[in-house]
Picture (cartoon, rainbow, N blue to C red):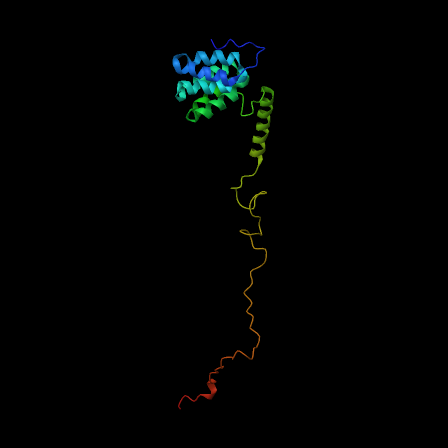
Length: 194
């Protein structure tokens, strides 16, 4: 019905999306059929078509996931864009859309990496795991290994021997009066009978 756009004619995504929205709003049970047909006919308009289908159906999160799956199956090269557009219109369906993406393309990360780069990343992750396993544990006894305080530093043996504090007398200052020095009498001067 709407998929009769010729290949030589320039595709008007806005016009098609308005027609899809109206068709889906009129008959919500055919939302998946309409989005599949239209995305297959115009994969460059996949984002607009998915948005129009979701808005026309007033879709719940589970239906949004089904719409994303149907559109992504027909246009797998537009899968990430389709998912982002669906989440933009129905943010409450984020989890369901992520589940669909994981099901359709389980080896693809955020950047959509190839299988060859994924194998390289697995090898790189194994090398990093070996490096981490060979590192000393920072919770081991302090001073053992490159991490933690060394002996003779803070928390270890003192670097300098402990000496008693040195008391420095203040210099004589004539402006500050000195307290009188009281000398006790010598024992020989005191007569015990007096």
